[in-house]
Length: 296
Image (cartoon, rainbow, N blue to C red; front, top):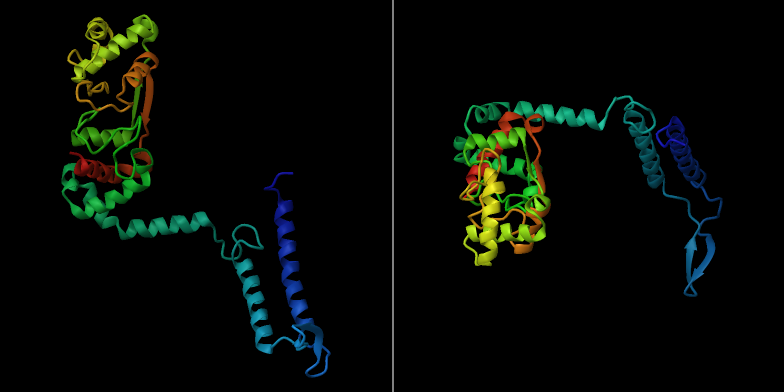
């Protein structure tokens, strides 16, 4: 049976009403015990400790009745007993939208001023950066980390290495429209695993690492034929294509020999989602300003 069918709604409703009535009836019947004054229940503990058979105190009963009435009224006013939000027509979504509307009105003037500023100007505005830090925490920290230092496969936003350029406009474009990067696997094109290792040695040589010179020499020719189109002849990358700089010893997907060989042989795919429809341009500008403010 479908859990969202009307059957479950009425089952819960009937159970709730019967439970409230049962509590009231039980308490009402126990307002008098029918026992004589100072008569005990017959229970004895530790030889001489007994329990009096006294009725429930009146104040306790009245408080219980008041609690039951409050509960019943609450369930009728709010979506407890009646469908469609109760008499007040309250819903979680409606309250959320009302609070968002109130917040937008309260911050409209401030956000309008932010919207007229550039990311570079916002990066120098302490109050704007406080707001942007909260936006980063809510929207970006899941991937880039709370400290913005990234993770394997996720760029570090605090260093001076930029895949798609470090200009404020480029950063804003990345946030607004996202990025989709593909590094194809080249093992079959290069001629096998050993050829991928040759190219990896040459790539490490570009970054100043000590490598197998003979292997790097063989990899150089393959690099200039296949890889230079995106990463450049000198290995410094191509921001227009998202080709990473291979000379600065900053490795998004790991810098060990085995990891580099794996990337060359099998390729990688990365996607930065677009936030234009989620945050809008003003909040995206704030995030761009925040990224500029924390980068070295």
